[in-house]
Length: 71
Image (cartoon, rainbow, N blue to C red; front, side, top):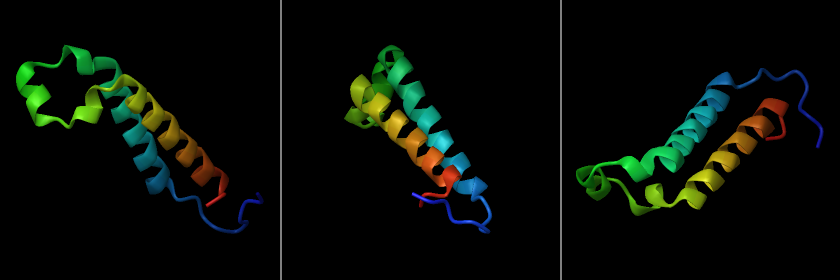
């Protein structure tokens, strides 16, 4: 894949993807200590650690691909 030359880097897209990756990492690490009321309000995938870690990796890879200009 060749990066597209001459186009500006979309920093807002990259920052958004990194923010989402950080959110998924936070939920993957800290969701076990949430209160019972928080468990009722949040979706069930938030408490599944492998799903949160997979989403973290996916968002980081998308941010890297966006930074490199691959899409």
